[in-house]
Image 1 (tube, helix red, strand yellow):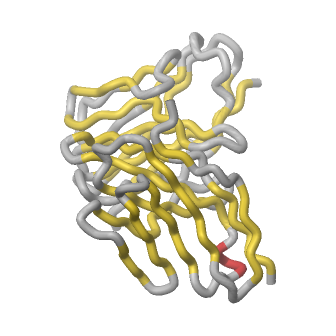
Image 2 (cartoon, chains in turn purple, brown; image 1 turned 60 degrees about the vertical axis):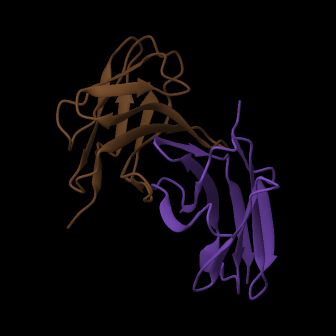
Length: 112
Length: 111
């Protein structure tokens, strides 16, 4: 049973526009959420995280929004750049449990 | 220079053979993980370890084994019981409430 879901397998965006990647989760015990970026044949690299005490966290062009009541988070990339083209994974964990659950990923393509 | 190192980068296995993938970290993290990625799919957890000499099965542990004799090392053995081992394997480590750091992965192919 997939506890973290990314329902859009792919997304294409024009350079300079906003990219919005979505993630849903089912476990209400999750209280820490992360986004990773992955290129083919490489390990994922950490982008940004948010704890459940916040509803927004910003780092440069990347902003993560958390809606706890909807069990939904999103990653906004503004402005999108061709170098952002990659697969993006969201992940979630809960306090006291060291396990980290990943979604299936969304492939972002930024068109120059 | 802190990080997590996986070796080898590419590995070929014959039918019926056991192979071991190496994962070493010098980040002083307590928890370590093994994930498997198949084409077009997400990261599926094989095993994880929260402390030395302790580990738990993840979602797809059948056909795999691990050990955690040292904090820095978490090797994964792909046994002959794993019927479809061709995949990209990722090792990670983290502390609670921090991000997980990943190695560069090992691509295992059955020949």
